[in-house]
Image 1 (cartoon, rainbow, N blue to C red):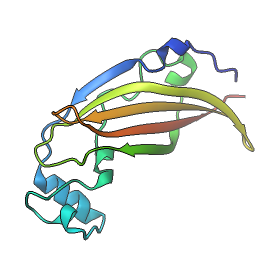
Image 2 (cartoon, rainbow, N blue to C red; image 1 turned 90 degrees about the vertical axis):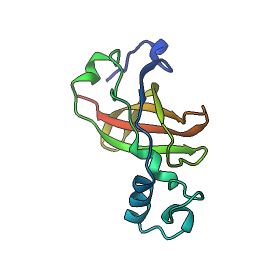
Image 3 (tube, rainbow, N blue to C red; image 1 turned 120 degrees about the vertical axis):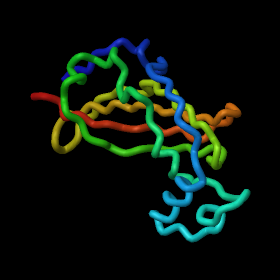
Image 4 (tube, one colour; image 1 turned 30 degrees about the horizontal axis):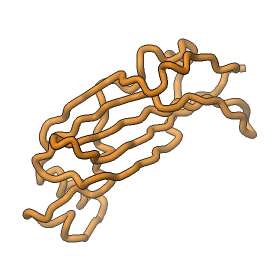
Length: 145
């Protein structure tokens, strides 16, 4: 499969979503579900912060841009991993905004054949404009023979 696309679509914002304020109960429940015991994640109070992986809870309304190459729009894919760059901790009351961009689009050949990878970047900031996290979500498509 020869992957053809307009490289101008890389880095273009295709969604911006502002989430409701985070509650202390949500932060506590998430950390406790992980079995976390560190007081900064599981004890109420001013020192409470979200577990670093809490950021994976956030997404935009749209998962892919409308201008994704046509051959990929209707095909099934699967999650091929995430890269997370952590920023400032999430605190109770924070309103997280997610900006979604198409970060990377590439083809690889492995032992089982050709694969196409689509990397969507979710850049998350709080209401103060501080970066909370950058999550690169990688989806893999099997190339058609």
